Image 1 (cartoon, helix red, strand yellow):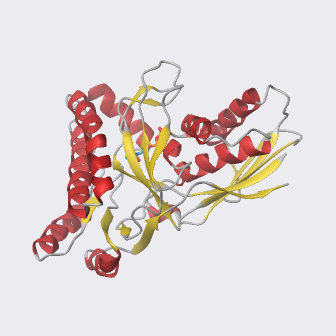
Image 2: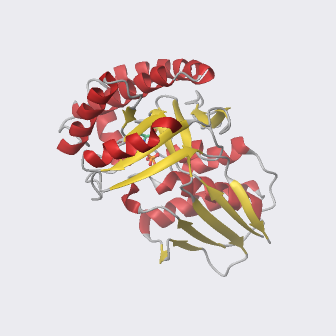
Length: 326
Ligand code: 2P0
């Protein structure tokens, strides 16, 4: 009745930006990400509590944060045939909120796997991925490690919208992601609101959907042959295009700041000098640099020279992992 699971966050190489169904969290386009170690969230779920309790990083969750967790627990109770009562969930992340990486992806992936395990359900990454998606879209890509593709699916009920692992963490062990924290402030517009605003008002949105969908198979083919330059170029253009569709929203949405652009400019100069380093950028000002093991120290130095207040070096991470069952 109790299980503890550890899961890693992920960074998208082809981004998810916009929902066709806000309630079921169904995206307009497919996306592709890399699971990031050593960052992790560990979550324990225990059924049999007096009432539902949700604790995240030492605080009792309230409002929409609590509602999103209860939604996942409710779905697991349904899957288990309604015989389970209230649950206690305790979740803790080992990375700072200032990392600029959403801990929600790792948190909901860990929750989905732990809740199903605690309920005595047979492990099933596809079902767990759909469950994690109900908490946060990008979480469906953190149930498994390595490189995961979230297929948008076609059905209105979401039963074909989940992530599949294309390559595991051992496929490309030399790949490195260096998170450059330029600004620790919380962003003004959350991803959920920013993507909705973009879908509703950006005249570029349809082009974004078409382009991103077409980039996913190209990214898979590049990953197959482990071509860092091709992957870096694809990740950069996809990030630029996601941000361009947001720039074109009304009123416009800009997640970059001057330091972000300064670092991007510096990367270009370093590339001209032969350094293999590219960037991707989520809905915030902190770029994630893409490089290889031989250049991760240089990439960190570059980020610091451009004003990074903190830097986190990451490697491809593994599957959400059962840490304990009681
Ligand atoms: C991604 N992002 O693919 C994109 C790129 C941010 C920029 O997924 O509303 O927290 O919970 O589904 O998953 C962040 O959005 O949003 C995100 P919801 P989520 O990683």
